[in-house]
Length: 125
Image (cartoon, rainbow, N blue to C red; front, side, top):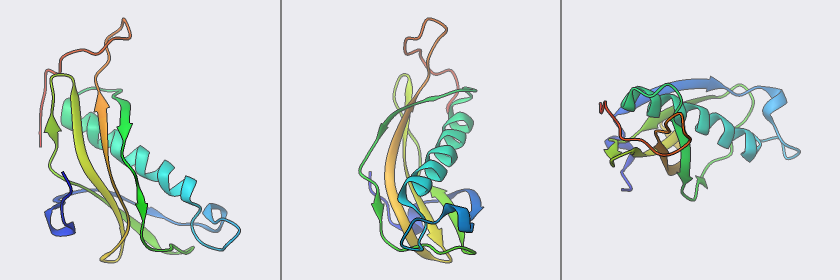
């Protein structure tokens, strides 16, 4: 499902990196970057599926490809969603300017009141 940056058509949102987000090396701490990414991905999954609370099911390897400093703005983009019976999967990446800082893939599932996977009713690109 790997897509080039030009093929990630869905802009998800932005995040300003603050001093408190930095690790001991002076760059954005990787755990915070993953937290930001998971939040943007969950919002995108909710919009794609119409589910108010999709559940993260699988996150691929995430590649941190560029250090990010305080004051820089991360822009998040997603690829075209692929739907299963109860899931949605898409590529996601974060960029600073036009330069990729993170890339990966994630899958979210719809869960019913009983805690089990349920079929999706709505599917939007």
